[in-house]
Image (cartoon, rainbow, N blue to C red):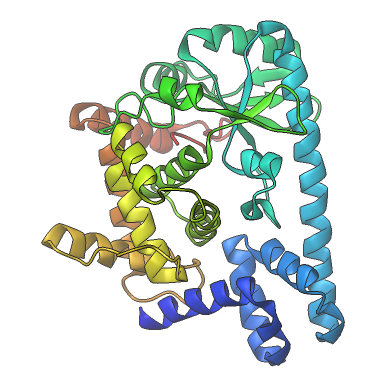
Length: 366
């Protein structure tokens, strides 16, 4: 495990200070590129090299690989900017502000976490009472609901924090419409009205908003601590690091951060996220807490084995068990026992007896 932690710290250092990349051997570059591909951070590495203007000093095969990653990330950035504009236009007549979440929000606000990012969808937050209006407006603009199975529709609409993902019929782009950041059945209950009330306008995008800086960090921390599958866990730690560092210059930080976390019932998710961001990538957290209970020691055992990039070069013997443990924990946090047993039983039955020509939708939950 210590080798995986050391590699995470080394990668974070290279992203922040890419001049160290000039000293890598071809064998070291091969390992680094493989790991970054698996962690969905190759674009971030390419952006760091580009910003430091050291590409010309790197071996030709490496330079070509990073240029390809850079081209892809810039293409995706343009696509997401266009998608944001399309979503804003689709909601224009509803009077509902377009509040972006996660990657799209980082891009709109110019946060370093957006650099080199790959996108699978756009996440937005809207008031629960206006869900029908948003869904109708998006359908008129070309998006259509997925997950047509009756059980899946009920799963999303009665228990989850979002409606089923909507996919555009022409572009194939996906928008996730959230009305809260955690499922209705989750153990924690952050009030989405308070988060929407604190949303901030994006200067150069009229009609577009994001969560406040503090709430963006809390959302990212909450997503990390409630995610059952962590293929992007290392990238998410980099996001948390970037968001945290932006806040350090604000007055009364970190007191305001912890006060807001308490207000939104997100104190524990924030503490966990900052703990592992500090341990794995050196986020400058003031007074990082030490393990003080058997429960915390168990969480350390799980997260420190599951948050590093999922690659054979870094995996330890306990990594698969840690990922399974966090998968179970995420579902336990997401739903009460009776609903969880019913839901997992239903999904297991469907996987066993689904028709060969009726593949199951893969995405579920947060």
